[in-house]
Image (cartoon, rainbow, N blue to C red):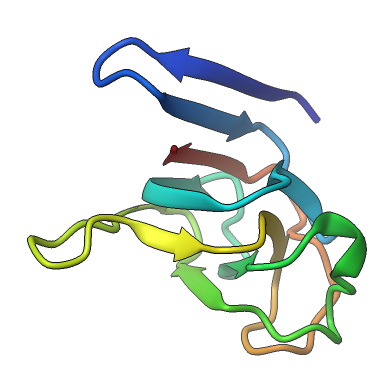
Length: 127
């Protein structure tokens, strides 16, 4: 698994988080309050089924994947890439007031602890 976080030059203060092999373990994107603007999930290596990326408004240590209810879930069909912008004129970004922690599993909802069979690439742009 390779994780990178780089600042985005324009507009200033944005960061791009990339995890090249997101799985069923909770991973911290940011350990404090954040605003997510954009997410991309590349599930093209998994032809056998969908991937569900779970987003938690909790610190990494407070998340038990399969037990802790996620605050948002991104469904990504098998062999596909899903990109979602969280921006409207009235609500720019998706707010995570405590922290932003993520995981990827093969079952939607709260339950499910099985990792996707092949690598899933997750990219999030946040401030």
